[in-house]
Length: 152
Image 1 (cartoon, helix red, strand yellow):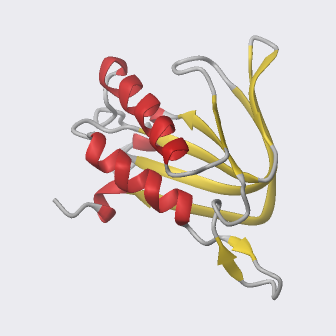
Image 2: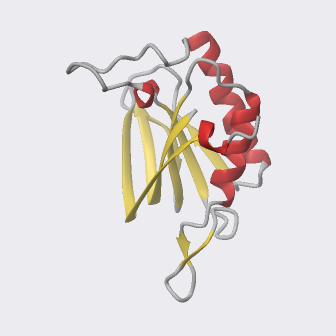
């Protein structure tokens, strides 16, 4: 699984001109599921994100996690994170999991993030054409690949 995490003051996602998910202070998480990803990797990633210290403390140091600030998360499925741009000019998406495999892991990841103690976990609609709006705080943008966390 690949993610791009953005620290936000607020974020929302719209499908067919209706807001389907929104958060206040917290993280916008773009999540790409690759072939071969499993619940173990989703568990590692959810725990890492919930506890990642990217929020400022009273000394303006990034020492606080999403859990510490009682922040919220908006998780958006995004298969394009799995794009390979090594060759040619068009990304190759052959490493992205098929929707039948990706959607259950996306839903599982969202549930695990909530089970880690994140106050509110909202999401978009898997596979839909979504419009995501955010107010990036910092900006702070981090990428995490679950393969780099894996201890299998």
